[in-house]
Structures are given as C-alpha cells and as structure tokens.
Image 1 (spheres, helix red, strand yellow):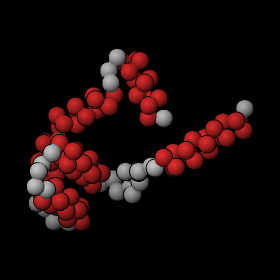
Image 2 (cartoon, helix red, strand yellow; image 1 turned 180 degrees about the horizontal axis):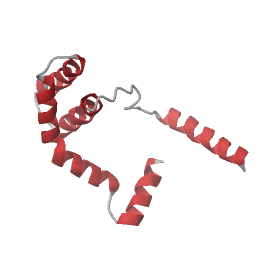
Image 3 (spheres, one colour; image 1 turned 90 degrees about the vertical axis):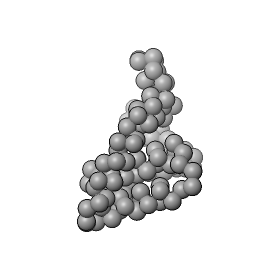
Length: 111
C-alpha cells in the first residue's frame, strides 16, 4: 500500500514522497523540538510526557538525525493533545498480509 501511494505521488508530482517528507521533517525538527522544550518547562501531564521524550533524546551519546526525527514525531501528538494510542501503529509483515487478504476478500464480496 505504501509503495502504491508513493508511486502514484511520484507519477503525479514527479517528486519522491518519502524523500520529500524526510527533507521537510529535517527542516522543521529543530524548531519542533524547541517548541516541545517550551511546553515541557510547564507543569502538567502533557509536559511530563514531553520531558520524558526529550530526556531520552538528550541521553543519547550521539545525536543523529534518526533520533531527532523520532523525538519530533513521537512528541507531536502530545503537543497537539491528540492522545490517540494508535497514532503510531507498527505493522509487521504478517499484519500487513492479513489486512491485505481481508481487504481483497471484502472487495471480492462486494463485486
């Protein structure tokens, strides 16, 4: 599914979606982390959670781009007060296959 979306985006815009996303994320990451630090300086449940994410990021000996991206993305729903536990959903290949099979069966039934 991800490859289909990326391929269609590439076809329409002639831009690689994944590279564009990470490029824009990298461009805004430092500012996002600065915003999170301001919010984390306050008190409250959201501030505590933000402090924990930033603490883990700060404890890393080597600050690489992946750690900063991870912190920026993990803290975003907290900052926006979107506390959906499925905001970040990880899928395994097995989950993807079963979802794909379910979708295929559902589409066949509708036809």
